[in-house]
Image (tube, rainbow, N blue to C red; front, side):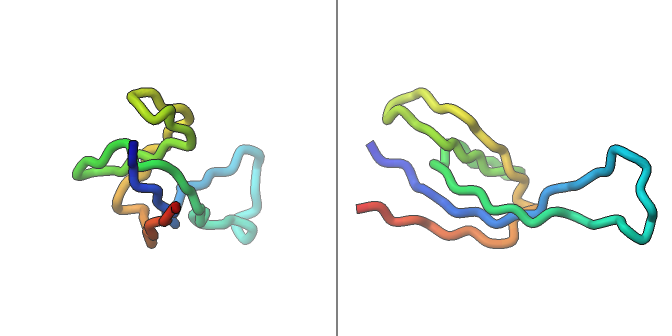
Length: 77
Protein backbone atom coordinates (compact mmCIF):
# COMPACT_ATOMS: atom_id res chain seq x y z
CA UNK A 1 0.00 0.00 0.00
CA UNK A 2 2.33 2.67 -1.23
CA UNK A 3 1.89 5.61 -3.62
CA UNK A 4 4.30 8.51 -4.05
CA UNK A 5 3.21 11.78 -2.47
CA UNK A 6 4.31 14.96 -4.26
CA UNK A 7 4.25 18.68 -3.59
CA UNK A 8 3.80 20.35 -6.96
CA UNK A 9 4.28 24.05 -7.61
CA UNK A 10 2.54 25.08 -10.81
CA UNK A 11 1.01 27.96 -12.76
CA UNK A 12 -2.75 28.09 -13.23
CA UNK A 13 -4.56 30.27 -15.72
CA UNK A 14 -6.55 33.20 -14.36
CA UNK A 15 -9.47 35.20 -15.67
CA UNK A 16 -11.58 38.19 -14.74
CA UNK A 17 -15.34 38.28 -14.44
CA UNK A 18 -16.34 41.89 -13.89
CA UNK A 19 -15.05 44.72 -16.02
CA UNK A 20 -11.44 45.40 -15.06
CA UNK A 21 -9.00 48.20 -15.84
CA UNK A 22 -6.15 46.91 -18.01
CA UNK A 23 -3.60 48.36 -15.58
CA UNK A 24 -5.03 46.09 -12.83
CA UNK A 25 -4.76 42.82 -14.77
CA UNK A 26 -2.75 40.02 -13.21
CA UNK A 27 -1.14 37.14 -15.07
CA UNK A 28 -1.13 33.51 -14.12
CA UNK A 29 -1.60 32.33 -10.56
CA UNK A 30 1.15 30.39 -8.79
CA UNK A 31 -0.30 27.37 -6.96
CA UNK A 32 0.97 24.63 -4.67
CA UNK A 33 -0.77 21.24 -4.52
CA UNK A 34 0.07 18.12 -2.55
CA UNK A 35 -1.32 14.66 -3.12
CA UNK A 36 -0.95 11.02 -3.98
CA UNK A 37 0.28 10.40 -7.54
CA UNK A 38 -2.51 8.35 -9.14
CA UNK A 39 -1.71 8.80 -12.84
CA UNK A 40 1.07 10.07 -15.10
CA UNK A 41 0.75 10.62 -18.83
CA UNK A 42 2.95 12.40 -21.36
CA UNK A 43 0.74 15.49 -20.92
CA UNK A 44 -0.17 15.66 -17.23
CA UNK A 45 0.19 14.28 -13.70
CA UNK A 46 -2.84 13.49 -11.53
CA UNK A 47 -2.81 14.00 -7.77
CA UNK A 48 -5.51 12.75 -5.39
CA UNK A 49 -6.07 14.39 -2.01
CA UNK A 50 -7.47 11.17 -0.56
CA UNK A 51 -6.75 7.51 -1.36
CA UNK A 52 -8.36 4.46 0.28
CA UNK A 53 -5.23 2.33 -0.06
CA UNK A 54 -6.81 0.30 -2.86
CA UNK A 55 -8.49 1.45 -6.06
CA UNK A 56 -10.60 4.41 -4.87
CA UNK A 57 -9.53 8.07 -4.83
CA UNK A 58 -11.25 11.39 -4.15
CA UNK A 59 -10.63 15.00 -5.19
CA UNK A 60 -8.24 14.53 -8.11
CA UNK A 61 -6.44 17.38 -9.88
CA UNK A 62 -4.81 16.97 -13.30
CA UNK A 63 -1.83 19.31 -13.75
CA UNK A 64 -0.30 19.71 -17.23
CA UNK A 65 3.48 19.14 -17.20
CA UNK A 66 4.00 22.42 -19.07
CA UNK A 67 2.48 24.31 -16.13
CA UNK A 68 4.73 22.70 -13.47
CA UNK A 69 7.46 24.83 -11.93
CA UNK A 70 8.82 22.32 -9.40
CA UNK A 71 8.00 18.89 -7.93
CA UNK A 72 9.22 17.52 -4.61
CA UNK A 73 8.64 14.06 -3.23
CA UNK A 74 7.33 13.88 0.32
CA UNK A 75 8.69 11.09 2.49
CA UNK A 76 6.35 9.57 5.03
CA UNK A 77 7.60 7.28 7.78
